[in-house]
Length: 112
Image 1 (cartoon, rainbow, N blue to C red):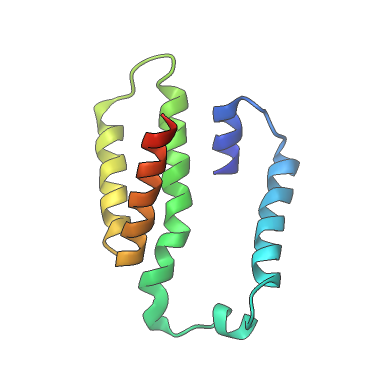
Image 2 (image 1 turned 60 degrees about the horizontal axis):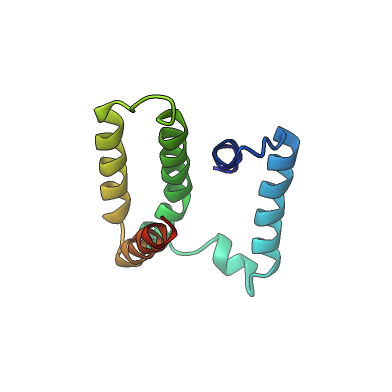
C-alpha cells in the first residue's frame, strides 16, 4: 500500500524507505501493545474481526493503483466490479469493519 501511495502522490520513495516504514509501523504497534501474548495468540473466534485488517490495505492499494492507471486512460469496467466485490467481501466479515469502511468513505468524500 505504501508503494502505491508513493506512486499516487508522485513522491517516488525507494523500496528501502517503504520497507523501513513498514517495519516501523509493525514494531511500534507491537511495542505499544499491553499484552503481547494476548494480541498475537488470541482465540480463533476473533479471526473474523481481524482478517479484514489484513485485506483492507490490499483493497486500498488496489484502489490507488486503479486511480493512477486511469489518469492516462479510462480503467476497464471489470476493475470497478472487482473493487466493489472485494469491498463487499471484506465488509461481510464483521460489523466493525463496515463501520471503518463507511468512515473512510465519508472521509474520502470530504477530501474530494
